[in-house]
Image (tube, rainbow, N blue to C red):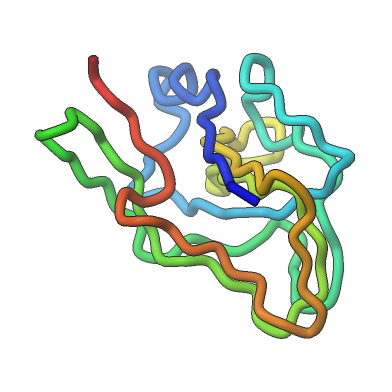
Length: 145
C-alpha cells in the first residue's frame, strides 16, 4: 500500500492567523481508524477528527513529534517540515490515517490540524512496533510556484 501525505487546506489560514508555530509549539501525531473521513477543505481543528484508535501501547492524543525543524530546499523552492520518525513500540492497533496537529493551544477546538497521512488501507500491529518513517523530505512540503 502506498501512503500519501496531504495538507489540510485551512492549515494556511491557521498559519496566517498566527495560531501555531511549527518550530516552538508541541506537534503531535495521532492514529485514527476508518470511521474518520479527512476533509481538506473544512477540517481546521483537532475536534474535527473522529475515530482515534485505542489499544495496547497507544496513548490517546498520539505521540509528540521530536526534533521538529523546517528546511528550505532552494532547488525545488520547497519548505519541508521535518521530525524524527514516530513509533509506538509493543502496540496492538489498527489505523487507516495518521493526523499531525499542533497540541499547544488550549482545547481541541483551537488546536490546528497540519496534515494527514492516508495509509491506503488498514495498517496493524499485534504486540509489535507501529512506525512511521519519513523520507528525506520529511513530513510535508510547501512549494512556492
